[in-house]
Image (cartoon, rainbow, N blue to C red; front, side, top):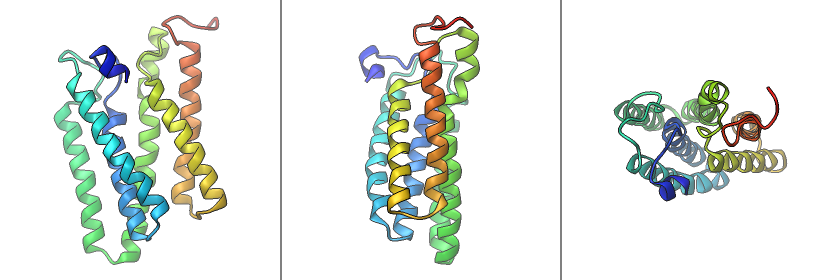
Length: 191
């Protein structure tokens, strides 16, 4: 919402938006492979939202942005390669192997996604400003990880869903602490 309202991405990183697409796609495929609608259905919605968010990010990206962790082309190639690998594993490996490898891929991508917003931690501390941490993304990750952690405890089994969401919960809390400390460009507490 801030990107659309302010018509700029400011100092927000691109990586969380790129990884969100890959993350949702991988979990949709994993959910379909294990025939678990509780995994593939919410991630299908997330995939469409992620594509919309990325489109909005690119639409308002400043030509002089230095916060992309690579170029738009590199991000596009990364997304394409990871999605292609997922599709190839699903099509050409025996189902048990595909389930296992796509699950591991999902864990790795999910961890990278949740940690990607922390890629600006050095900038946050050096500038004493949390403007490069997207608060809506952080809150969405916090709620998402909390809900998945609860669902796994009571309904689903498997560390493929639990481990990355627990780590995502920790990452989100760390980001919220940084936002609290450096919310308006000045430390909230003496540092």
